[in-house]
Length: 62
Image (cartoon, rainbow, N blue to C red):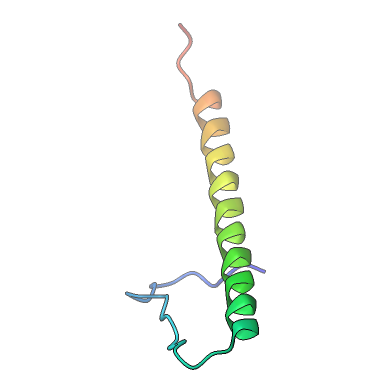
């Protein structure tokens, strides 16, 4: 699912207050963060591949 285009919020990540969370809640939070990092890394890889393909296509012969 793609996010809608438009202006991005200035600060998209608002870390929660975790002072009173239990160990299992903290582990679940870490798992969620790792999933989000993996999602961001997949998006970076996809964009890098698109850029590499465009660079190859538009490369000047020589």
